Image (cartoon, rainbow, N blue to C red):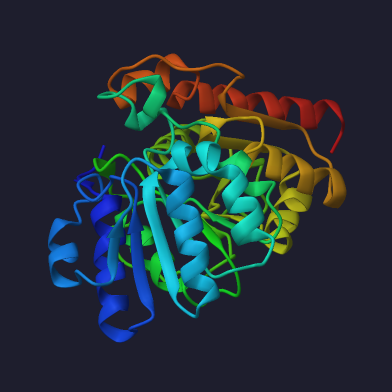
Length: 321
């Protein structure tokens, strides 16, 4: 694994730069200033940062009121407390009127639960956010992509949910690249390929990249795409790779129900049906533990990815595609 950086700090640094440029930017916490390492930002902008305490529903409605008055509020707290505890408030008071509120959900996935356990391992957030009309959903790969996503979020017409990590997040991009909102990022491309892997999140992308190297040695030609924006999904790029590869694997630190796997399956059913294996949490909760060990234990190891690719390639060959 590469070096670690905090996606939480990256998000706050991006917000800091936005607040310097735009007086309409404000920030709402739900007893989460320390969670986001934002103490210095609060000191810098004491009249534009608000902590409502352990009251996520209130944080969302406060932000909705701010947005309806012409401000651009961020709401920063844990992913599950936003998407579950405050789901109704996000739905009715933000998504329905399409207000420009940007939600930052920390501890997405099981990889962030080594200190706090299942109550703070949020494996459902992307699925919940995806079903809400008008809400964009972004799952950045690392600190660099998080920073860029936050900067781009304020340019969107409507609300946004951005998944943030545990604060000990692997660096994936050694060099910056042109981040495009709503555009799938091609990491590795083979043309033609035996299969395509769609992945989201830094832990998963690292593992997929390792798997592709091993598969290449065995003679498999595999393309790898980083799906940082789950909604709106880049169906043009996804469809192109599905049609060309005719076999696909999705990999995500999230339940396979409702997240990236579901998004790709839905797109494939409408665009180009192919053999598909979805790797992620298989309708189960996870235990606490060290991130890498946990991901291995719940079927998201490099070996699992390799086996899944070989499975879909075999199915493709059986179908004569």
